[in-house]
Image (tube, rainbow, N blue to C red):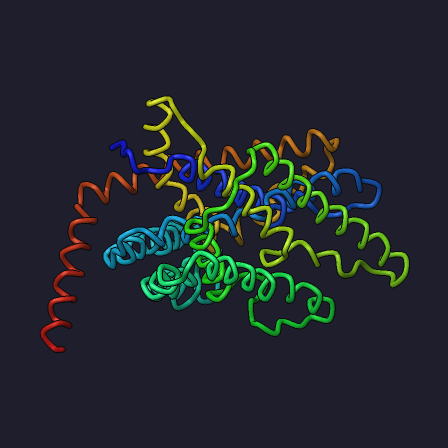
Amino acid sequence: MLSKNRNYGLDLLRMLSMFLIVNLHVLGQGGAMVRVTGRETVYYSCWFVETCAYCAVDCYGLISGYVGVDSKHRPARILELWLQVFFYSAGITLLFRIFSPELLMEGSLWNAIFPVGWKTYWYFSAYVGLFFVVPYLNRLVNALEEQELKKLALVLFLLFSVATALPKVNGSDFLQLVGGYSFVWLAVLYLLGACIRKCHFRRWEKWKYLLAYFGMASFSWIFKIGMENYTRKVYGEAKFGRLFTSYTAPTILLCAVCLLLIFETLEIKSEKVKKWITYLSPLAFSVYLIHTHPLVFGNILKGAFSGYRSLPAPLAVLAVLATAVLIYIACTLVDIVRRKLFELGKVRSKCEKAVDVVEKRISSIE
C-alpha cells in the first residue's frame, strides 16, 4: 500500500545500503580484495569500492533514529523480526544438516536456536538491545530544545567518533565500541539520526553532499593506501591503515550522514517505482540474514571470489558489483517465499495478539 507519509527516499537508501553491505562481504570474506604482489592496482581499486561502501551499516543505524524518533513503538515488531531471523538461522542450519552435515561447525545448533544470545547476526543482537531502550531515547530527544539537540549531536560525534580514532593506533578501545560492532555504537547512530530529523538547518544541494561523500571516502582510501605503503617500507609490515576505515571512523560516519541527507528529501514521482520500492524495501534485511548466516558465510562465501584478483582492475570492480547484484537478487527471491509463508500464517497479527496478551498479564500483575 502506498502512503503519503512514507519516505520512499529512505526506503531506497535501505536497499542501497544493503547492496553496499553485500559488496563489503564479496570483497572481504569473498577474497576479492587480497593484496597480491604485482597486482596492486586491483587491490587499490577494490579497496576504493570497499571504502565507498563502508558507511552502509552506519546508514542503517542513522535511518533507524531518523524514522523511529517520530514513529509509534510497536513491541510486536521485535517478535516478528525475531521470527524472521529464526526462520533463516534455523532453516539454513537444517538444510546444511540434511545435505552437508560435514560442514556444520561447533555451536551451529546453538546459533540456530538462539540467534540473539549467540550473536548469530551481530547487528540483530545489538538491535534487540536498542529496541527496548528506544522509547526512552525518543523521550530524551523530544524533550530537548533544538540548540541542545545540535550540541548533543556534536558531542556524540566528537566523543564516540573523533576521540576514538587516534587511540586505535595502540589498540585502545576505551569506550568499548568494538569497531562499531556493538549495541553502544548502534545507540549512538540512533541518537544522531534522531537529532538530524529534529534539527532544522540549511540543507545543501544534493550534489554537494554527494561530492562530500566521495571526498571523505577518497580521503579514507588515500590514507589507508598511503599509510600501508609507508609502514611497509619502514616497519616491514602494513600498519595503521584502518585508522579512518571503520564504522566508527569520523570520515565513514560523515559519509553515512551525507547519504542520509541526500535521500531524506529525494522525490520519487513515478507511482510504479514507489510500488516497487514499497514491495522490495522490507526484503532488504533478509538479504543480510541469508548471505551472512555463519554456515553460508564460512563455507560458501569464504574465498569464493578470490579469482577476481587475476582480472584487470576495471573488470575486477565490475565483477564485484555484478556479484553483489546477483547475491542481492537471489536472496530477495528467497525472501519473497518467506514473506508469502508469513502472510499465509498471519504471523504479523499473531505477534500483535501475543504481545497484547503479555502486556495485559503484566498490567494485571502490576
